[in-house]
Amino acid sequence: MSEFTDESPALTAVDNALSEMRRFEREAESIVRSSRYALQDAQQEIASLRAELVKAKFEWFTEEAAAAALGVSTDFLAGLRKQKKIPVVKLSARVYRHTSSTLVRIAEMLEVKPKPELAKQKRRAA
Image (cartoon, one colour):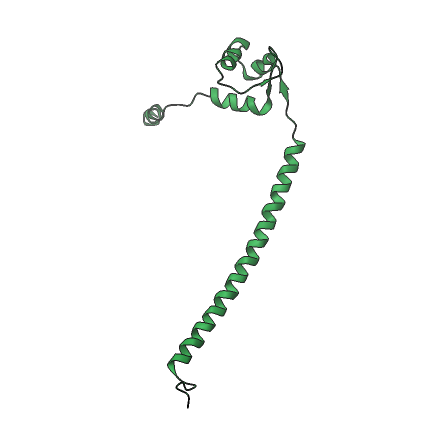
């Protein structure tokens, strides 16, 4: 005679555990499936961004043109270059070029930001 009957608590606990494991397995499969879709979407987005990046062409600026675009003197820009504070492309001993993306970075670097305490004082005064 078997120790376990059809109604034994041990069999019920095993059945419950198996049911829960099957439920977890279905949930895991669903998560994996949705993760695959998200990965495919991300890969498509990356491919699209790469294509845009290839299409985007850098504009090259001489030191004079870069200085004019930034509204600074060529001497000032040359000084920053000599101090290695700005990125440049060195084509030869005395020929340097700036790209459109580096001009944006230079402009951000030269931007004057208000000090937080002065901004608070101005708000209080207003």
